[in-house]
Amino acid sequence: MELTRLKALIDPGFPIEVSELEITEGGERVRITKSSPVPERPSAPSDVTRHKSTALRSPPDQPQAQERTENRRRARMAINSPMYGIFHQAQSPDSPPYVQNRHQVRTGDPLCLIEAMKSFNVIAADRDGTVGAIPGGKRQEVELGQILFEIGG
Image 1 (cartoon, one colour):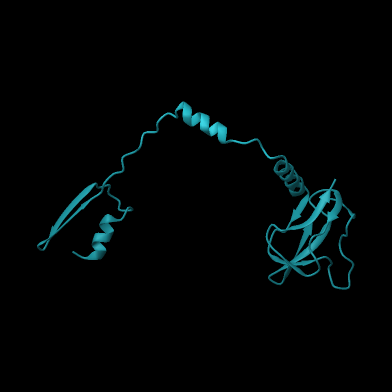
Image 2 (cartoon, rainbow, N blue to C red; image 1 turned 90 degrees about the vertical axis):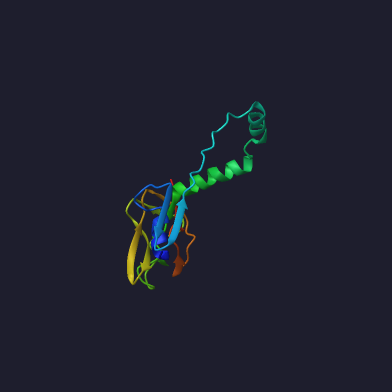
């Protein structure tokens, strides 16, 4: 029997659900048996198991909770890069930057340009506020999701 034919028969994507197959061809005999896994029955947790699982839990660490809160706050205020590319603070090297630290912006105001595949994409403010931090530098490469600006209320 050909190996490719055997492989096709034991392929899990084979359209017929078979648990046992026996083929005799030209004096050769092949028997294929699929063993079905026995599902384990979940047992109810004992009192000891429940006691251990609650004993292993520790109260949340205060510095970690503060860090998570700070990260959430910064994420709400952050303007992230929607693509990979080159960060430009101004329309041309001779032009002044679109925004600087402590600059007031309104929704829709241009903040920077990202050059990707020889095209320039305007990144605009998505809310009113004051520009807090500009982590990127002139003509710096930025990645998808990287923080470009932080805008505070």
